[in-house]
Image (cartoon, rainbow, N blue to C red; front, top):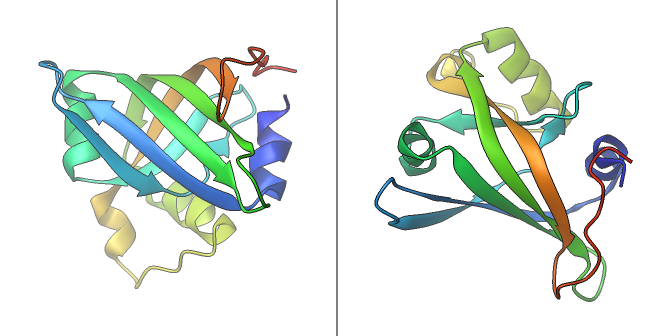
Amino acid sequence: MDLKNYFADTKGTGMLATATRDGKVNAAIYSRPYIADDGSAVFIMANKLTRSNLQENGSAVYLFQESSPGYQGCRLYLTKIKEEKNDSLVEQICQRCKLHKPSGEAKNLAVVYFTVDQVLPLIGTGEVLDPTA
């Protein structure tokens, strides 16, 4: 599955699930990830509960349901690699998803990078999809 093209071309709704070190879970609606040239999934995050959880526990799951009828989509199993403050990258990624923030708001956002450990269909135990294909 070519994740870069998939998320560039496919409309839908995404949810990112995280947990604290002690296992207290959180889920939040997130836009489609930006897939970097190295295959990492990149999200823009405010300093809220999801990002706080990732400081304690770098594992996350991203669920994506396509806008088309039915239950098409995928689940990405993720491990946090790093995060950085990069206002110009935040602006670039936010333009891609048509999120236009008032000037200066990008300074409160972080760019968070994940390895994609596994890709599964949205529902069922179907075939494990190769994130590099």
